[in-house]
Image (tube, rainbow over all chains, first blue to last red):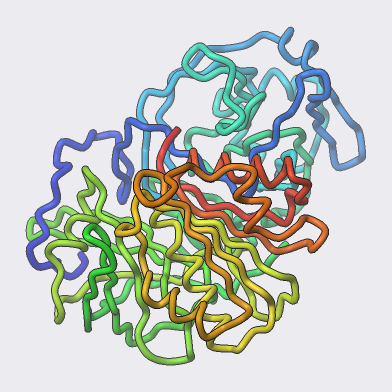
Length: 199
Length: 244
């Protein structure tokens, strides 16, 4: 328990039971990115899974959107403290994308247009836990929110859900990505408040 | 990849408010004495936690406004938000002598290091000026020779934070230019546009380090303008707040 802040009552007592500790509800959709928003033409979009032995599985936009897709509703949690509940997306499950990928590696580095990276254990991408999403609320995903397509891993802090994702690289060892190298937590479980190194 | 000055585990600690200062009718600066502050880079932020008597607590992140001379207090400037649970407490209730829990510094990307030789372009929308002021102050402290330009968009002249200090710094320092854009009031109310960035920024072939901070729509507009003018997207660092 922290020290009591004199005169602080707090107002948002109606916060939902499915709100992780330290988070507050937002009905807006905040935008966070480290640089300008890339605008990626669909005819130049591609997505590649690279294995540890150098095998590459690549989809262009037509191939990718021809894959079986799912609609799903999830809560999302940003390390900057906002949570948004019941967001609805459409995308391709990582289970679908990994169907023909042979790998013995346990870790993945997600890569994005513009150079952003973030690391995730492979098991956090499989078994219905993650998607490459390309629609939000029934509309094509806005560039500001990572469109044409972003990684979506709702059970981890949202910096793991890489915007403008264009590849996944299999790794034998866990390596820090962009924010992880800048002091953020290697895993990022919102329910354990794994915000920064050492949390 | 930029490595940060984040040393291991960040622990919560109690800071004491040693002074409060009104910056505008809706923003104020809190001067915080933090016993074990490890120092920070201009542009970093801290996390702050308030706890009510019944145990309810709320956390928020605030940009650091001050530079870090190696000792002494840390300053944050807080803008009161219309529905701000924490910001209204910090702008209206907190007084000298109160204790506040915080931890930091955080963030190793949106930072200016005084060893970076490039000219610097800062573009602020509203309270987005706070981390940029830390950079301006640090440049002044280390007598940096990198030329700085700040384009600062606010609704009215009364909404500008640090107005007197900026005026004094521009007067005393030929390496610093500040241009205000007033969107609602003033001699020529307008929004920031291509001509503004082109006229008061640096040309792209100077390869400046660019820092843009403000509300989401503002940052999107400015970043798009900079890219269209030919700036390398990799040299443009952004920090956004609010939704789209």
